[in-house]
Image (cartoon, rainbow, N blue to C red; front, top):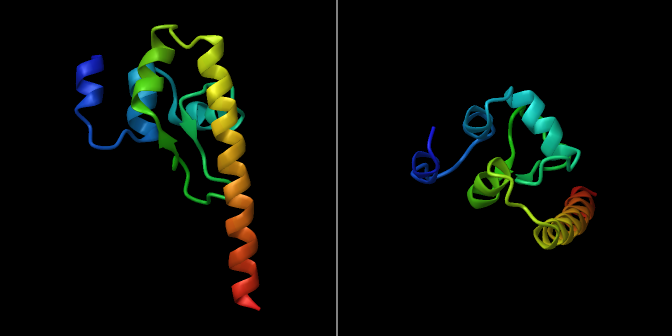
Length: 98
């Protein structure tokens, strides 16, 4: 699969991303979840296997070895914000169930 073919997808799924990288989808999902491969976010507590958000351009840069340290820092900051938002939303959902 070429970069252009990947960009043509309206949404890049875990399966598509794994095919593009030539690895198993479950390996990719676990690697993204553990922050080893910085191409997206796996929602915490997600029960559906393979469900994750993939940044297409980060995926392409990762495949070509173009993710530099500044991009990694931005990715880490994004993950912190996503995790903080998930915490807030989880608390809000829990308070509405009472």
